[in-house]
Image (cartoon, rainbow, N blue to C red; front, side, top):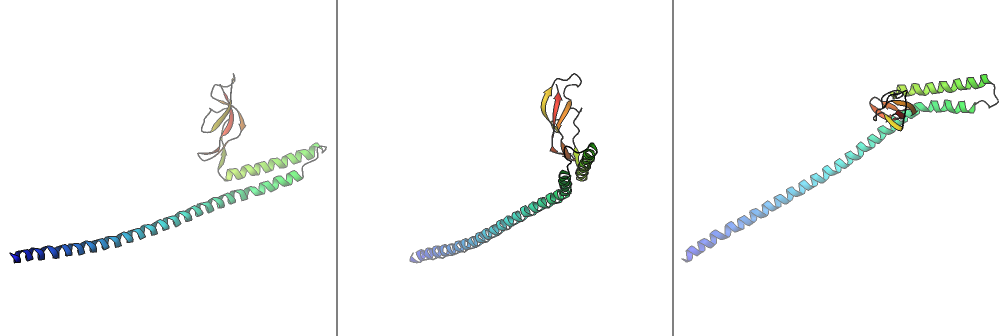
Length: 176
């Protein structure tokens, strides 16, 4: 019987030690794998943060370049207005001088409109049109026998759009 007990002791002991060693080995493998995953995740997170910063900077640069390009084109018009204001005729100037100055201002206004046209900026049709809250902003609603209700009867401030995008709605008076 002593041999039987010895056999059981020998049988129990080695498998338990082997299981413990196998579990320790598996634990070390899992720890190593977890550390690799953590390192990979941290690296990916850092790369994403760098990518995000780079994209934000590129977008800011593109916005700044687009603004500089458009504003740069308008600086000539500002220069023309500055020269016109410096050459503004005195109140006692003759009508011919005042008329020439007004014609010059009209040329500057046309130059500005040409720049807007070149950028694809369009005026929003408003006067006499049906009121459209997507294009117009009603300032007042007035009784009008000459216009049907819901029609724009006057433009207070012109509206503008580029394509289908409204830059600024037209401020209008609407008939009731």
